Length: 598
Image 1 (tube, rainbow, N blue to C red):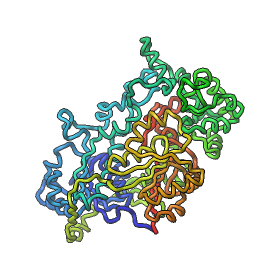
Image 2: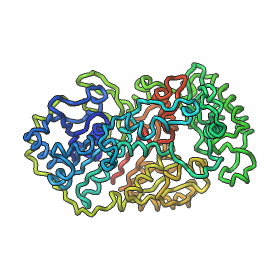
Image 3: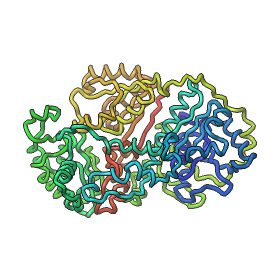
Image 4: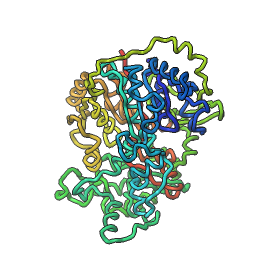
């Protein structure tokens, strides 16, 4: 078994509530020693969720307002690698542990600050930036979806803590990147404002494109434009809204009354696959099917089955036929059929149902942890893990308050950790070569994120596009920026030879695919190890986990993950009005990191 990536890293977690502790939890899940620094009165958030965020950590009570407590904290900083805090700007300075002081104590320390708003914001830096305040300021309550705008229920409050979730994700990435570059850059102070992180997550919802072509507008966008131009009220009922939902991007009712969500508008073959699974092959053969990458003036019909959205002429006919078919079986039966047919769709569930779902538990997406205070708890699984780590899902419960006290004398006997580096201030990922084999949105966003921090990313795309133009062009503006591109036919010998040469020179390869899809492309871990023993495979899919479950090879997208886990039901207000919270985001996907070693 390979060691966990962060086994030799020590983290001091001064975080409170969600964002900071979530970073600490993810680092602990990857092997770091995380010490939670508690106030004399204990944690400020007394909630079962806080216990989950403390799993794998130890606790040390320090009174930072006393000289003894401050000196102990300084001694720990000298013997640590990472400090996390999510206070308002200036609080750590008042405590005597601001960024400059941390660097004086330990020039190699990686200090992460997660304020609500940027410390350089003259108007908002000092605002008590609770989750709802950040959401209101950045548009989370107003830019969350076309459905709510058409129904006239903006502004709409949601309890989803997206700012902290995105902030923790970007914070964790930043810490990992900075640790990797520490030998040449030395220590760093990193600031990830939660408001900035939230807007990053909302980017696919709030892109504004000048002269946006009509061919890319969804039926709901067209209706929004019409109502705005004619001065009509935004007052559609949920039932009336269905007229403007694309047949391959909506919820249907099954024989048991449960909703079943289909998201099949991104890959050229998926709409046809959906209709075949429903027994509507004859209907599929009647529908227009041509290359949608032609100039729209050259289209032989108003829409193509390989392109989102479905045209006005056929939208109701297709949706009605699909609804009638769905009523012949239960949602569970359809989920099994769609999974085996590799057609992306899922049954709608509540979060309570997802916590008890057989696949979620078998795959390790949901874990059972024995909590000291609450007994058996079901918690979120790892966000990232090594494929050859059989204990990735084994979790220590939350710590007893101040349980690190007994080990403190031994810890303070250690020599200070003096990672000085050369302070070259180079991009964190400079020199890293990444081969990007992903498509649609979540996968490509990995590559565009790596580019921003200095990596050289080469995007491999098929000679004949498999992704519809809406995804490739509109979302590609953000998801593909900064990359080099090469077109290869990976089903040909020539294409496979070229791919092998690219793999030989790469450090990382990214792919969003199930294990079966990965292996069909000749990218099994065994083959990659033979080609390049140093290569790291980063694999992303919708329903995979550290272990194999009944749905591990089911296809899916962000929206389907939301439908399966109860996010859509919570945001929509109930099972009869479920809507997705944020479409097309890279959030809540299961990452699999496979480190291939000789």
